[in-house]
Length: 356
Image (cartoon, rainbow, N blue to C red; front, side, top):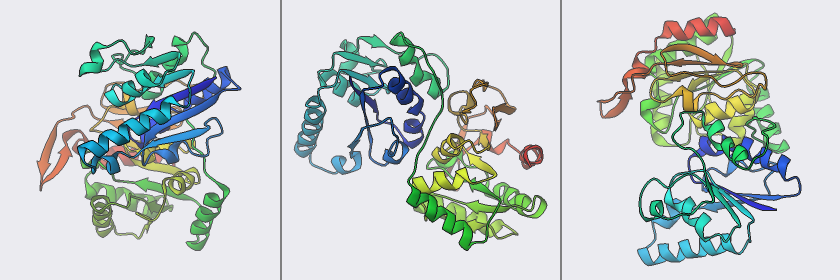
């Protein structure tokens, strides 16, 4: 059995698909499972023992080409998929690119979500369709294809893997900075409206270091707006956290989280990565929905039961502080969320007191 899983989405989305992959491997133990994704997301599934090949779609590069060259690249990419002779294709997005690949793949079994718009929405592409209307966590949404296959779901663990070399390099960073126990804080997101107010974030950083006597390591992506935001938070801090922003790969980031006493941050891929390592997560959701994107618990005895409500709620070892006012507004040309503004430092410190 040769299986292709397609997910042309963002980093966190790809990571949350790993329970589907592990269940497919359990059902078809001798299968070859490939994963097609956008460039930049490959670290979420590389080193995964259940995945044989990663097929990368380099969208930024292709979009810079002429229309004719783009068409050639699309044809080349599709032919590469088709010549692999897949028995089954599972498309995990509602967009047209994954549906198009599934349609042209030649696979005997094609599963996926309905295409939401365009010509492909009028064509019968998939043998069976997933339900993309039900409000459920992203992990459960992907796992429904196991039910559609008439098989039993045996585990719901989100997993991320890294090499021994990455482990050694992260250990060296901690050793060089004389760090034993620490809190990992990732305060930024590629979507700035998901961020918390800088002064409040700085107060929580100081609270960990002054009141809880725990060192804080701050991380951020190697992009200017995130690095600038971290610099502003650091300027507001009274204490001196260690800043590793822009210095770590995604693999190093995941490994770092696995060694932390706690992860604190907002709704981002690093939050999902920390949860995948079973490190307790405290995350703020004032611009997105915890019911769909909350930190996933790998604890098999608990179910993900985040609700559409304000306040503090948990799942396994993780805790979410949410506010459902998702109204966005501009402040100094930066997009902000009224829901994030509504989450107070007192709420956060109260949760921190329970965890530490």
